[in-house]
Structure formats: C-alpha cells, structure tokens
Picture (tube, rainbow, N blue to C red):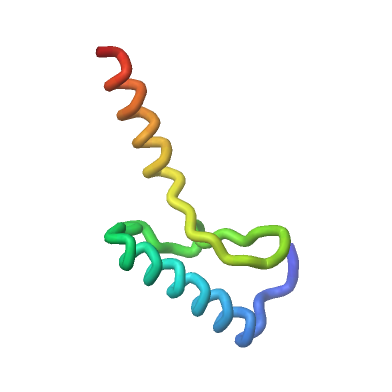
Length: 68
C-alpha cells in the first residue's frame, strides 16, 4: 500500500471529480453512485468517474432485449 494522499492531492482529485460531474450534468446525465470506489485514476494521473454496476446492468438489459 502506498502513502496517503496529501491535502493538495485530495483537493485536485475533488476538483477533477466535480468537473466530471458538472460535465455529466451539462450533458443531462446523472451518475447516481458517486463514491471513492468509482473515482478512478489513469496511469498519467487523470481522474475518471466510473460506474461499474450500471455498465453491468446495462449489459444484462441488452442481453435480455436481444433475445426477442
């Protein structure tokens, strides 16, 4: 396990996560599951918002509808 984030790093993560949420809202989308486990980092340090359950659920809906 690595060292904890500094206050400055946490501030940057929060800022980028909030910018992502603002973008979603401007696109008329709602995330509905903002939590630490859904804030992801790229290898170059960018913050991404994930929603794994929704993608899995959407996949299940797609599968069930494709059987008709």
